[in-house]
Image 1: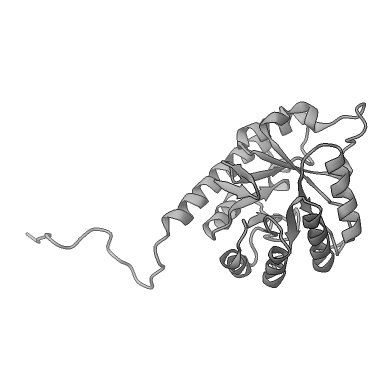
Image 2 (image 1 turned 180 degrees about the vertical axis):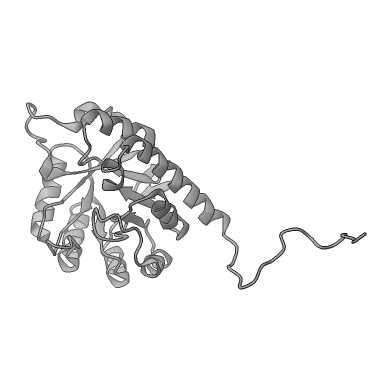
Length: 255
């Protein structure tokens, strides 16, 4: 069970809703993923324009918890304003804080992210900040009251997978809230590794929406996250320098 603030979820896959080839493929991918949390950029939606196309109209929103994000914000003030806009539209009290500090790498601004998180916590939001794999920043975000931390595996949309497993492991080991790996996941193997490291969940978008077959990839990610979590809970064997026989030697005779 994944618990974020007062909310509980069976699925540990959070799915983004951007850049799908069509609404129909998006809807099918969402359904086969069994994701319960869907994230989207508030700025890319015409939430106050009923006449404009809206992916929410394609889905039974009673089945999902919506996680609007503040993509496009460059400052804490912008992120707070976008979050309040989402709340005013009646979408959800949960918000993913995303404050980009570098246009080339799309890496988050640590200072503005911390400021926005602190302000939105005071405003009563359930706050999930997107960060780099900065161990100290992850701790400070928790100290100001965030409900989950979301370190990137690698730059947004890059598909490079987990490039710094050591830092992710440090963040997970020190966390007192859920750790959801966000950004850079490219394959089911990447997602499974994140879960084997002890992450509480994985947020995906491009890895599914830009796949040759988004629907199959959505199902593959679902299964990978489930397998990775089970592997983490089961506890893998230690790596050894030499081979170890898998069959017992006792009771064996050579005739």
